Image (tube, rainbow, N blue to C red; front, side, top):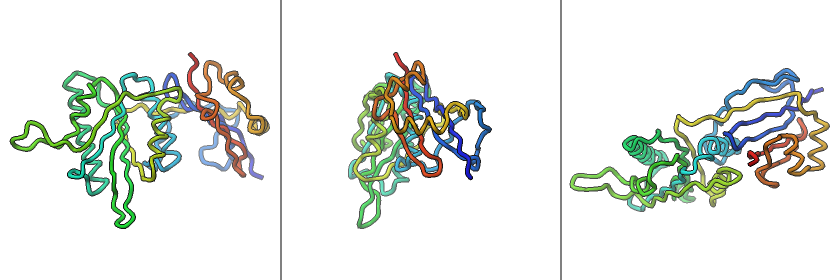
Length: 274
């Protein structure tokens, strides 16, 4: 008989946002810890699939974004597109183009004495049915604030040629203040994932803080989890379980999932109570 334990895993994403996973796992699963032990904080590992079509990548994207940009009132969401003249033939060529752009942004920040550039980059595109080639390639970038938005938009240009004062515009570029809400940047991530069709590859700067987590295997038992999954308690219940924190909202903030092998799991998204 397979023995199942209940693990509580807290994922720390800054001072105002965290997630809690309450789930069953078996002694045969990898990295199973001794029951009743509370682990040290560990860094969450990045998902192997670096695209937002993958569930784990989407979740990590939200965690990483909330940790690094959710509390930055000047953080920007930049959308960069290509004109027909400058449309890249491949996704790799587009990623090279946007990498050059980010280097220009980083240099402009350095000239103004601002902290180094931090960013999360999403390259989105669709694939043509007849040729299989990528079409409608564009980029979404979440970056730290400080640099004037007009400067950020103006840098979306080709390198200037001889006789030019400025390089050609690559396409449309718009920089808006990042509109974080009680769910942090989850709304932005959902927007990126739900764009009609298409694929989304993402990357980030190396200087981002990484989410950390801590596991506790003795706090809950299977009977409790089954009871809560059946009764679906409300916000007040979870506020008592996690003092000082509340659900981000009544629908998005708590999710229940059932697995035939390990039973019920509960996933919480919490924000700091003001």
